[in-house]
Image (cartoon, rainbow, N blue to C red):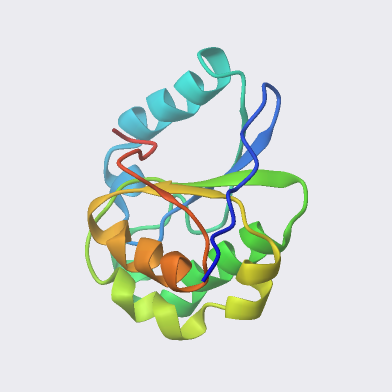
Length: 139
């Protein structure tokens, strides 16, 4: 299998913010806001919050398809240059059946996350897409 290297980020790029695992931004909004501000002020990136980004842990637990839909839309959107998970968590494995491998494979881009995001990293690996383990918005 040959791997697709995502395009590097440049100042001013739009980056998707998603919560594929837990709803920590809902519980700790000041930490989340600080992460958004750092993307803007330190890296000069434009965060684009997807619908699940600020949802409660209960909502996210009950709606794995909504979490996957955000990821599918972020990969499909040509204006989005990277996707950053808000934080790790648990049960991300439940979103995998709802991911669209054809859309994701056709639109490789940077994905960053850690902990529970290992599930999504492995999904991308199996599609031949390089991802970056270790970074998340709230950390």
